[in-house]
Amino acid sequence: MSTKTPAAPAKAPTAKHSQKEPRLPNPSSKKLFRTVEPYIWIAPSIILMAIFIVTPIFKVFQLSMSKVTRAGQLKGFNNFENFTKVLKSPAFSLVLKNTIVWTIAVVIISTVLGFILALILNNKFHGRKIARAIVVFPWATTLVIQASVWNFIINKDYGTLNTLLMKFGLISAPVNWTPNPTAYFAWEIACGIFVTIPFVTFCVLSGLQSIDSSYYEAATVDGAGYFQKLFNITLPLVKSSLTVSTVLNIIYVFNSFPIIWTMTKGDPANRTDTLVTYLYKLAFYNGKQGEASAVSVIGFIILLMCASVYMVYTLRKGDDDL
Amino acid sequence: MSQPANAVRKKPVSMKKVILRLLLYFVVLDVCVITLYPYFAMLCTALKNRVEIFSGGTVLPVTALWSNFIDIWSKAPMAKYMLNSILIASGSTIIAMLCGIPAAYALARMKFRGQTAFLGFVIVSQMFAPVVLLIGIYQVMMQLGLTDSLLGLVFINAAFNQAFTIWLLRGTFMGISAEMEQAATIDGCNRVQSMMRVLLPVAAPGIVTTLIFIFINAWNEYTVALVLISTDTLKPLTVGINIFNGYNIIEWQYLFAASIFAIIPVVILFMCIEKNLVSGLASGGVKG
Image (cartoon, rainbow over all chains, first blue to last red; front, side, top):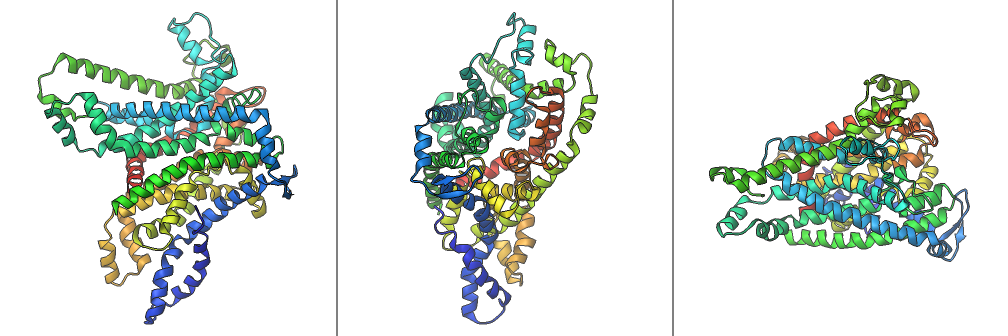
């Protein structure tokens, strides 16, 4: 993936010399400058990402294959022992299952609901601007705070959900909304959906707004019904917006840490852990950095499969445009 | 439902249309109420006293205790947290833009070998959220001596926002015709001058959108700050406010009063860029 890019910063220093003398009439130095110039422009960005993204990636791979002391020192290659330890541990399959359930549930449900919400908000009605501003709220709010509020709302002793439902007379006694870890996990998923919907909605809305209304007028003249128009005009035309939002959401949701960390910390006994909370605990609570890195690498491999689909899609799309 | 409403108005109003319209308002109202409910609960709780919160039973506070909003500044180093958040977010924004603008410019205006590879790398880098790299990040920061420092967080946030910065700006730049810059070049400007004087002013809306978006992301960042920062007075708001969220006792009224301070600036900024951000994301995506 990044095999070609590390070459670029190496070219930058030579480029700087030629930059000092760009006015020389010498055509060959001018030509040389032309070829290296783009690399000077992208160099700062590459250096920044190389130090703070690429190096940590290498570190994680290195740690995942090494014996690591509790203090974080490397003691050489250990024959993928970290991976076998992780894969053998009974908690891991549970955590992996949770991660898959969490990602699929949040992404699919928020994509469907976000899409419907976008169709609704695309209508012209009074207060549309206000409604759109309100829908943005959960997107702008940091996840830790969102999760804290939901934790408060569903509390069985003093949460406002029980209070409200009792005031409306829908329940007579406080309900324990989180009787078991599965129920708590479901609430975490609900919170995840709540914060993910706005992103989907706005991606789809941007797609909807670029559709020429003459398509719909023509279809109406031809006697097409609402759902015919939805499936034959709207869906195909917002497909690219939907793909972008879905792929990005898979990545974000898969890697989402604050909601679960704030609400349950993955407890009890890994029942609500996902890969990221699990690896956080392994690394920073249990001092097992090697195993935690192995979990990271397994996470990469899963996501890489998703990202490669996305890349093939977007890059091919770019070729079509040319 | 997606056709423009003015087409509807010309026809005689049928019963079905009226019902659909009412249904539309009903659904929109419900969505707004549900969306705002957590914020409403937060505000109400922030105005209650401890006893009232833990005994439950009230939605609105019996008497609004505005003093909670003042107390938090003395109960915790809130001013420090706030300042740290501002420093981290502005620092990250500046560095991300300084590195991102030239890169986006090169991608939009020049042709070079490895262009596709660089773009591919930018896309793939989004896949590596800081949280999965935490261990690696921690080790790198140890070597650089940047653990427990605001500067470390600034660099991390700037780096992990490069993808979005480049993506959004490249889309903006590509949407602007290069003719003006070419004219400036003929008039004797070099590339840097023509970019600064011609392209950037035209691209200002896109640049402001990107800027605010990075600011918000950095402001809302939680996980890396949680790991890297151990000194209390260096924590940003997202991590710091959890001082009220203790193991044994949660001071909900203070937690939410502090949270409101953390939310308001961001929500206002977000509402300013919402429209531009979405079209930016879409154009970047479509132009791939």
